[in-house]
Amino acid sequence: DRGPGGGAPKWLLPAAVGGLVLAALLFAAVLGAFDRKPNAGAKANSPPVPNAGGPVGGTNPPLAKGDPERELADAVRPFAELALITPGGAVSVPVGGALPGTPFRVARVTVPPAAPPPPPDARALLVKKLGAAESVEDVSDRGSRLGQWSESEWDQLCGTRAVKQVLHLDLHVALTTRTLAGAKKLPKLKSVRFESTAADPVLLAGLRELTELQTLALQSLGRERTPTPEVWDALRRLPVRDLFLWDAPSLDAPAAKAIAAMPKLENLGVSCPSLTDAVAGELLAAEGLNSIALSDAAGLTDGVCAAIRNRPRLYYIQLARVPGVTAAGVDTIRTRHPGATIDWDGAPAKGTEPTPGKLAGLHFDGKTTSVVVPNLSFDGKLPITLEAVVTPDAVGTTHFLLLGEPGGGFGLGKGGELGVGFYDGKKWVTDFATEPLKVGMRVHIAAVVSETGFTLFVDGKQRGWRDVPLKGLPKTEPPSVLGRATKFAGGADHFAGTVHAVRLSQGARYERDKGFAPPRTFERDADALLLYTFDEGTGDVVRDRSGNGRDGTVVGGKWVK
Image (tube, rainbow, N blue to C red):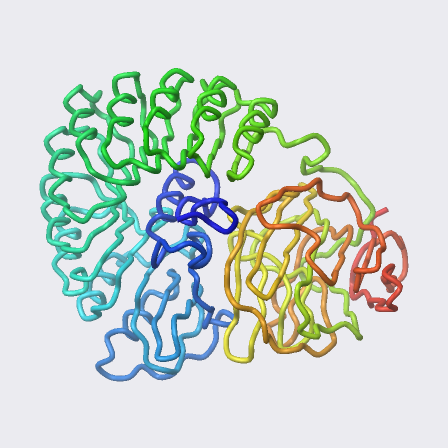
């Protein structure tokens, strides 16, 4: 179940950060995998399937009368991502993306947090269209964009033919007698999220009747009524492998001991403001624990690092929004767990902090500015490394560097996450980082593209990866463009902010599962194919410092000195 090289389990990597959204997304990652085979594909929010959507707003074939799979996909694609099964294999379609012309089945419907607002009747629409489609295995609303499901809506959902195949449901619904009864109608249900504010021990015990359940997320457990010992006893008896307690108002030592005693527990996530080192230590006593995610806990200190150090089986550790944990404490974990992935958002190592303020560069206005590189293309030889130092003024779908026609390079996705992709003549093969860039903060971004997949880095930390065969991607033809897409890829999305440096290199400068100190700017060496340092300060030409003569022409930019 581990990622490449013993890295993070694919189901646990977060797709974004921020309060309950992070909590929902961490759980959505569990729901996001087609299988749990090692190296089976990407992290949770990037399914291991090629992208068929191409540029957003493409033309769709006419709807075939009586094709419920296409009707479902066409109805939800304005606000949902889709995973489809076609005769040629599995493909993914981004929000708003074009559907393939060949027949397909819908395997997954995911509403991401950054999706456009769904229509008011989105839940009813989804139920209606699911009623005729029978192939959906995963329905996920990662940021609760669809709102909370009523008991009657949940009844309707669990009564459709489609749910006979459903494996994963990540929707905002309260745990009640009626919703539990609905979930029991799903014979293959493996993972589910419930809001459990009342902390009813009878209902929690009733979850054992979901006989295939492996992954459970309980949101706001006990927010309206303090959990009794019976609640924790019911939880202790649940035979689930993955447990997530998000936005839990409180956890004490007896509760933690009960959780640690769960018979099959391997992966645990807890978001709790009152969590202490002592209680976290009790949680970490779970014998079979492989991964731990602790967040939103101001009371945690480096004492929790000591408890983590003593658990040799841990191969994924997340500490998010725990200000009492220091770099020294995290370093002691790294020493004891050199092969584990540690995802910590605290004070980064000295010299790697995103930095505000001025640095020489070229300012892009987000409307017209670009740099055209007439003689730069991609010859298909891998690996390559694309990297830049930038200060965004805004985040959203924008482009940094597109390597010629028909398309390939990197930029930002709709949520502001670093993305990389190439077009193979039929579909886009892409990956995205796990969190958005920050407006006004200088950042080093990098993408390593090899024959076996993508790896993404933000400020020297690995923030995304995807295993997918890339050998044989078509060559691209010049010109290449910085700051907007090439004409073929749809050039409407311009970068807004300052670009301080750009480098394209032959070879992999950075290794998967290994961090590095990001450079402030770039130096010339034998591997550099293109190198811009943007220190000209005037004129309409950017000099290629690599020595390869690939100077760029500035269109509408403003120099920053």
